[in-house]
Image (spheres, rainbow, N blue to C red):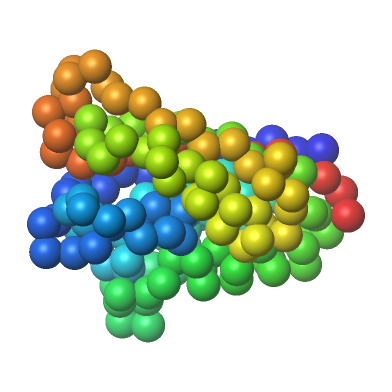
Amino acid sequence: MRIGFGYDSHRFDETRPLMLGGVEIPDSPGLKGHSDADVLIHAVIDALLGAAAIGDIGSHFPDTDPRWKGADSAELLAIVVAEVRAAGYRVGNIDATVICERPRLRPYVDAIRTRLASLLGVDIGAVSVKGKTNERMDDVGAGVGIEVHCAALLEKA
Ligand code: MG
């Protein structure tokens, strides 16, 4: 078994839709970024790559590469899952914490877990997504953006 940890953060961008875990969240500003800025998927990707010790999201999908401009992060995650499998592992489980003052995630958590489980090729019971605020502390607490922390376990296939 191998453990990995991923972190990501993005600032809000009022002009874009909000994508979280491959699900579009209505009635919320989106996030600034080169791709679709799905901060949750980016943290999951770094946790998986970290667990397999095969680099990070920046080395796999450089933000200087026009190929990834506006990229669907769900497609990036599918590529990473294939690379993890090629390295001889399968996903055991993931546990992510999404930190933001808004939007409230609870109504969307099960849709996000379902989507991530399908992308990861695991049961929904192997995907945990927890939302919390930063109690109005620091920039995330002031509503500047969203940050995500994620742990992932890989098992030898
Ligand atoms: Mg990112």
